[in-house]
Amino acid sequence: MLKIILKSANVIPPFNEPARDLRIQNKPLWLAQRDVLAPYTHREIEVLPSQELPKVNEACLVYRDNLFFDADYLSEFIRQAVQFDHPVRAAFSMDDAAFREHCLPLSVSYQQAGDVYCADLWYYPHGTQQQAEAEPIVIPLLAREIGYYNVPTYMAANWGDLVYQVPLRSLIAIDSWVHIFVADSVFGMFGRGARFEDRLEKDLLFKLSVLARALYEGKQVLECSKVVKIGRNCVIDPTAVIHGPTLIGDNVTINAGVVIENCTIGNNVNISQGCQLMLSVVGDGTFLPFRASLFMTTIMENGMVAQNTCLQMCVIGRNTFIGAGNTFTDFNLLSAEVKARDGNGVLRSSNRPVLGGCVGHNCRIGSGFVIFPARMIESDVVLLASEGKRIIDRDVTYEQSDHHRLKSGYLHRRLYPRPGEVVDDGW
Image (tube, rainbow, N blue to C red; front, top):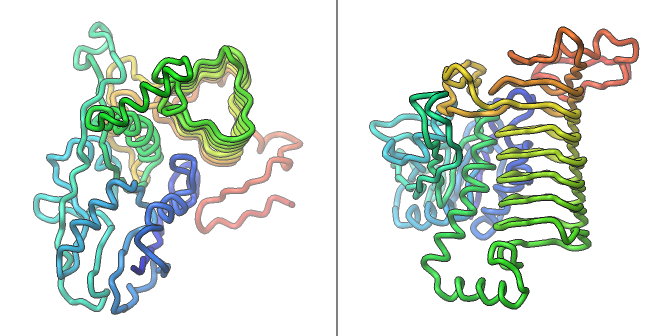
């Protein structure tokens, strides 16, 4: 089958990169799409935003390159799609709790058609020369409600136990950094745990194999090699506590007192003493010095989070340094709703009562900052703490970077300009 990839014209702030080049589940999005589609497609055509859809006479799958989808969703979509003799398009109902709560807020990609919302994923059984309009087919995400946070009623009477609608299969358009957080933490880490529990309930042989492996290795069930997958050449201190489902890459060092629960750890990662990681994605080449803490946080490749820094529900870009003693807050103390910027840069409700911040690529954040919920720091920014500046209560753009006022500021190159900008930094 042929796949036709529609290139998105939008870039995702604060990274200033298209979604296809950003990492989801520690893979560039374009690579994640290719891996999922590998069993179904044999060649591809890329279509630029200014180009029309090419006319072909063979069965083809058409999708926009800002979509994240997993194998479970795609297999079900294709299974249903091939039963039709006319074009079909992926769609969602508002009754789908995962779509309503997590995909639709801040998005600009879905088109409403009657009582459903259509995604940019099509199947043409006889090629794109068919004149028939694509019929929406609704593929439920199979969401289940899972609690993750408790806000005391004396702080916020409208909240108590906070929950995510965690799907067993996933499709989401990446229009905002918040969607990366959703794809990694909610649909990714929580979703992996939900699928593991679902398989335990339905597959008796799998459950028995997990129990047998745990007994053979003398470990608790969540610590055995059936649920904690470890790559080659890893050095793991025996005092580290690692609970699955967890995936650890190659050449990883995990030192004494580290606690890891339901995470994805990339290749060549170094995690020092006393770090705490939960429901997080740690990209290739990341270094976490002692006592760094990550909760539901994504760090793209080659990042560094220094000691005593706490990141909750955050997304951090590649080649970015977060200094010691920084705190990314995630809850508005006066119970105001947390707003974030959508795919058009407009500030809107994130539909999240708690949400951390986002830092772009190639940033250098000094020590001792407090960052308010849902604030963005644009790529290539340098922030130096001073007596009058330790609280970040608004988005920070490249023009506000502190390196502009330093004599040696030219040493910090701008690598991720906004679309249309020409960079001349003297290099």
